[in-house]
Length: 390
Image 1 (spheres, rainbow, N blue to C red):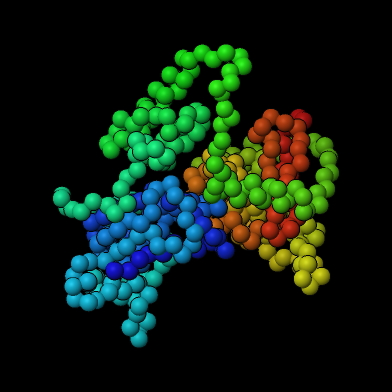
Image 2: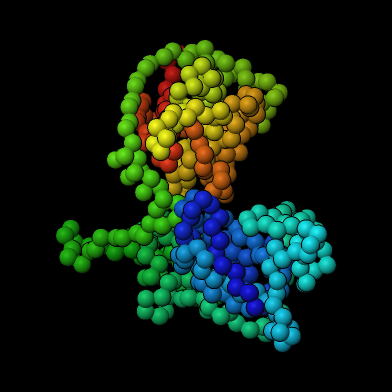
């Protein structure tokens, strides 16, 4: 029975956290059914199955961080074993080109990250729903962890863990009231209420510093910030301009039918101004190639937009942004922000940026110096803060 190994879903990623399993031992899955959701250093990613058959073992528990290449799940059938056969991965194809699988008669494309064909898809999800295991099926090879054994990871879903993190509640101190000891929202809120009701002396020797592990996106963000601050020269220039006419233009654009249902903000015009400026001054969209001692003038503008998300700072970019019309740019910016805040930005959308905009006006400040997004040593500029003089 074949093991599914954790793949590299980005460029050179070395590890990922198992966020949530979408299947259980005994479930029947088809090729491209979603098996698991993982968090990499760049985003949340759903991994589809390259095999068809029954889930026979889940090898890694939720919350664990594993290296690329580690076996995380086994998919096969007892029939495969008794017949001396092996479930074939989707990329084993006959000499005609289209991959097939012995468990299905339909032909399916080979995909690593993404969705398969539309037949048999769950309504509204764009992917197949795994067939649930029948009653009495064998239990999971890796049992769900509870907070009862010493040192075990408390059993809670990712949103509950996020709530506990925000409230400063240590899940190891919480007793779960859900099935198998699972911790719920109510359990976390009750634990916080008990903590707030306790009184402590001003200088209690029993109080300890709270430590919070950093991994995934936040770990990558911390490393990038450090690299940027100490390895890239930063130059800041300030100028005050009158944007009265810009504000009037925004009001006019909001009345046009082609902008219906889309946010028209100062960021939209700042982004368009940047794209026009790169055509006039291509040096700001260039990169220094240390290996060849050359300046590389980029033919396209992959416009990065810094987005603060619950999982950390992301900088997804719009490919070939210079080719977008103003309405297209407005919709692209809205989609980019919504996808990033939902944690669904794919690794490919966070690489290859050539110019980055950082909007700090949302914090109610007049100015600031952003750190350059490292990697390609690209030029970076800060967007207007949004404080206008009318």
